[in-house]
Amino acid sequence: MMTKSMIQIQETTTNLDGTFNLVLAQDQRIIRLHSSRPKAEADKIFAQLTPSSQAYFIGGLGFGYLLEKILEETTAICLIYEPISIIFETVLKIRPELKLILENPRVVLIQKVMSIPQIIQNKKLNDISFTIHRPYNELFPDQFIELKDNIIVGIRRYEMGNSTLLRFGKIWTKNFFRNMHRYFKSQKLIPYLGWASQKPAIIIGAGPSLEEALPFLQKQQNHALLIACDTALPMLQQAQINPDFVITVDPQEKNSLYLRYSSNKNHILVADPAIHDSTFEGYKDQNIILMDSIFPLYTPFEDFWGHCGLLASGGSVSTSAFDFARKIDADPIVMVGQDLSFTKKKSYSSGNVLSEFSRTTHHRLNSYHSVQAQATHTDHSQRIKGRLPNTTVCADSRFMLYRDWFSLEIPKSTAQVIIAGMEGAYLEGAQHTTVEKAFSLLTKDIDKKTIAPTTPISKEQYIKFIKDIFIMTNTLIPTCAQILISIKKAYASKNLDIALKESARLQQQLSLPENHKLSLFISVAIQESIQLAQNINPNTSKQEHLQILLDICKDTFEALKSLNHQIKKSQKFIAK
Image (cartoon, rainbow, N blue to C red; front, top):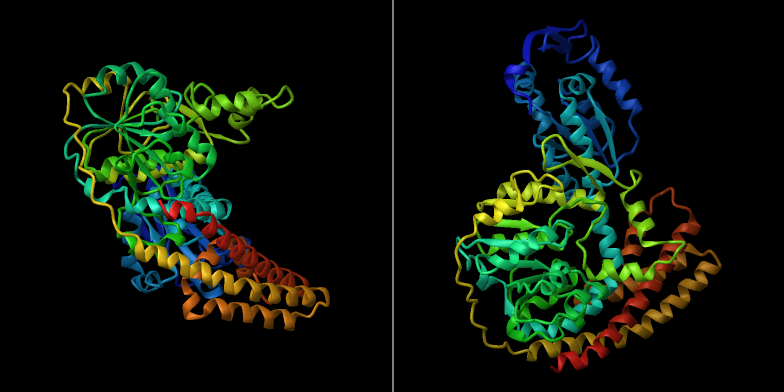
């Protein structure tokens, strides 16, 4: 960030129309904050912005004339990035009424570039009109390049979160019902909070640089707690390295391959409750830690087994592994195999189960190497700051998401965070060093004794609840089928009034107090249709409206049948 000494305020001027301006000096340059007619300038900029945007991002507040225009003409959120306090403080002294404008709940003042993705995600923004005051772009060119990248990352993160829910909603539901019974016998995360106070930990990812770290891990595996991402487990076991904890969070069945055929399952598996049930094969109950879930479906069930503890999620198993190391109070935290880039044009270390499997599934017209080349092509990736001075590395949007999560979270950590390996993306707040130097800090054996297993919890009330939900679905399925037939007829005859009436009847059934928890399950399963319904507005055509109502009813009917089926199928798991 620019320092005050690099920018000087030479004078304050008043324009003929009563507006204000600042004359700034930087490196023997004279720069004016506004034109001689700032309000006309604001009108011109506003006319060039995308109308009816969800939010407007203003790079540089100036005297606030553009902000006033946007607040007057729209109902959108205004994100203001102000890069340096000397300009901001001077402006508020000259124009104190601006303080009231900044207190508007639609205004968000941003002072740290790295906080932008989280703000965008929290406010669920994916339609942002963007402008930078030209003088600010001249004063702070590097910051505003980074700022644009962070806005893009924030939008991608929000959209990726939505798409993840849409993509995995049904998988989560199926896996969760099959895994719930494990809460009553497995361990909780909470007892491990602070358990490893001041003990060193190594987080092991499956990035290409893991190969360099394997010999050091072999020799010094007793000098630190080994916390492995599930993706790294096959390579570790091949090298006869036994991790203490393995973290797994991905709900897809293919992800279970990393653990299903593991030859040694004496480690503790820290798992999200929605992973594929086959992942647990071969694990003893006392060697499983189940965490809470952010999945909406989880809430109605939590009371049956109590709060377990939650790991933060940044979209990757490595972010959850890092949060686990923080939660157990490990210090220092050394990270290996965390490239977050296409090191040597690879995304995983050699020996990764799914990468090796993909080599056998591609053919000569769609070879493994062509897929890798496409992933690292400039159209699909970009250059970001590397760990070595004055270097850049190749990364895609996924890696940038993870990089930004780490760069936000590492500075918040009380532990020393060391990135072992000089290839890969630079992470703010971490110490970057070679693998050899990182492992030279780990010189002593440590006590790795884990916490004794707890007594299993009764699941009598849980079984009763599941049976009640099963009865509710049996009752609602015939009613929903009748409503669906009526809406199909209304769609065919283009009768929107009947379709709306029947949709309201369905909503009324789901809104009954006795069906409240059931409606939570349904809303998760029909997220895509719900999002379409939220887009209905006065300009939506009758045909589109009818189609959305029909889709919601169809999806609800299918969700009820699916839930009924999942409960029926999960009976053998519940009985365990």
